[in-house]
Structure formats: C-alpha cells, structure tokens
Length: 132
View 1 (cartoon, rainbow, N blue to C red):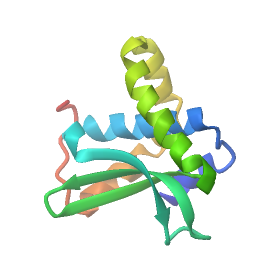
View 2: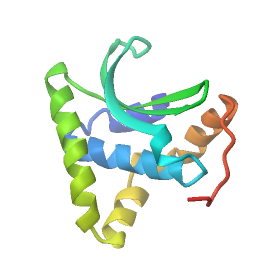
View 3: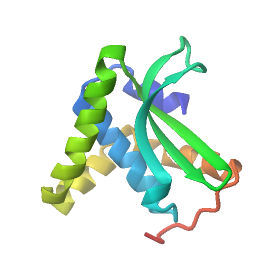
C-alpha cells in the first residue's frame, strides 16, 4: 500500500484523492465485496512514516478488516475530503460510464490493483472477480 501512497504523494488535490478512492472502491466491489462493507473516510495513521492524517478505504466483513491508505491529508483538509467524497457520491449519478471508466483506468489504484487484492486475500477475504 506504500506504493499507492508514493504514487499520490505529489497529487494532493482533493478531486484526485476522491477519484482514487472511487477507483479503489470500484476495484474492491468488483471482486465480491458488498458496497455496504466498504467505507471511505479519513483517519490518523500511526504506521505512516511520519504518522499523519490520510484518506482511507476500509473494508469490514465480520471479524475481518482491511484498510488502504489512499493519500495523505493535512488536518485542515480532513473535513473537506469528507465533503468532497459525499458530493462525488451525489454527482456520480450524473456522470457517464465513460467518465467513470476513465477515472478508474487512469488511477494509480488501477496500476496497483493486483497488490491491493493480494493483500486482501492474505488478510482472509474471499474474493470472486466479476460478481458485482
């Protein structure tokens, strides 16, 4: 997951972070994870170097939990990220499939999707490609 953070280290615009969170959400829900099991939020991550706030995607199923840091956030951007994510959820309904596909395939998350899914499988998640 450090690779994803590195890819995004210079791209801290909130629209880019929201697009990356969308891409991760799409990748994960396309392998059998229910959308209700996925949360996008911000958190204080102690295992970052240095520790700090970040946008994060969290998958929870029963006793299994998997967290993917999306990008670092300044403390002052945490609420702005939440607001931008919620606004995207509303605006997404009016975006074309082509625009959403472009957001997915152009993302850093798409380039490291195999690593993300492998990490989930190693955590015990059973994945079924193409089920959603």
